[in-house]
Image (tube, rainbow, N blue to C red; front, side):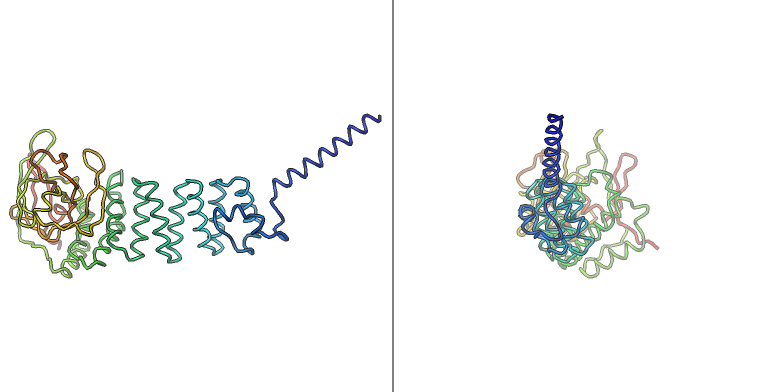
Amino acid sequence: MRYSGVHMFRRKCLAIILFVAFSGVARAGDPTTDNPEQVFESVYARIGALPAAVARERLIWLKLEELKREPCDQRSIDDLAGMLDRRGYRRQAADGLYKFVQNCGAPLIALNKAAVIYMSITDYPKAVEAADEYVKRAPSDQSAHYVRAMALDGAGDYRRALADYSDTIELFSGDKKMISSGIFLRMANAYAALKQFCEATAPINRWVALDPATRDTSKTQKMIADYERQGNCVSSTEARKESFPIHGQKGVVTVKAEINGVRGLFVLDTGASYVSVKSAFASKAKIPDGGSSDITLITANGQTKAKLSRADKVALGKLEATNVPVAVQDGDDKGFGAGVDGLLGMSFLSRFEVQMAGGLIEIRTRQPRK
């Protein structure tokens, strides 16, 4: 009996010890009496401090306890940021998400959320900082570039915003017809903010060209006409056309065209976003690259970088366009082909109607909608 009593006493002691131990793990302190800055000093060092009143809320206290036990618990930081956002502590929510990724390396979606929250409180410089981190960690993610484009736009850095809007479109992996019109419109607005009204027509023309049957309307033509009028670069509506034979199974079409009065050999490419030229040709044609932003291009040989610039005039036979966005590629890119100076892409072609039939590609002036 004595042995049994001692055994029971030991079991009770062990139970008490385990209860105390697990209670200490389960709770990092008492929210009603303890100082959260002391209890969660290690957590605050990683994600930033919270006001004592909000930290003492039961649900938030529990999330802080989780992050104390598991410093890189992605679910906990997401839950905590959501709670802070809903309670109006948006800056603390954004700071927590941003700093969490800096310390833990993931998840990248937290950088997206942080940048969006910073924009919601009109802290565009901080939104750009978070978005820069996002792009650095995910350089081929079109969402990262779009978030940064919006942040740069809000910060008034329209030139860099243009490059990110361009990358957003270029890096979209699906059917580009599915890209939201808002991205093209934001890009046009960024050009307009720089007083480059003629170039502002290019994104709208590109969006129309992706689905002309439904998008070439009086409304879109009015938007284009308004920008052309502001830039004094109204397109001719005189009926003109050029036709070129399609050669070989790959359907390659090479043409002679002039950029800023300099003649060169180009591949007609309706899949290319821009008129693209080699740096040597750009130098001859006096296409400026000073202050130009880097953009991403998807080519047959993979991703490459180029400078986003513009040509005063591009002429293909009787067809002409002014203030055309141009991508200048570094070095002598052999991907164009021997003797080829570049690509005649959609920054030029989208200003016209393009049709392929009967072994020919026909390009003609776009006629006004009635």
